[in-house]
Amino acid sequence: MLESWIPGKTIRINDEFGTLTSRIALKTLFDLDDEGDRERFNDTLRLSFDLMSARLRRIYKLPLWVPTPEALCLKRSISDLELPLRGLDKKWAMICCPG
Image: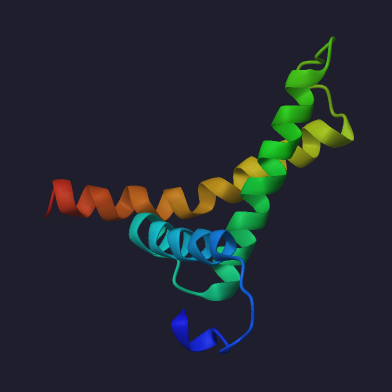
């Protein structure tokens, strides 16, 4: 992180530490070490939160099984977020129940 900072240039420290925290958490929890994987996961997580927030603000909420563009997008993003968890289940099973 420090090697990317340029002397005399202003940085947004909250963005830098947010990136660092995300990098540590995603590597530790999901073994996502690749920058592209981390960005994709963070973007999908942000999209999921935005879609869920918009859904919560609505007065009338259609059930998620109604195939609206928002519901389909939310289901797709949640499915994408579950991919690293599927691999994690296998790792935990090997740690908890070897052999």
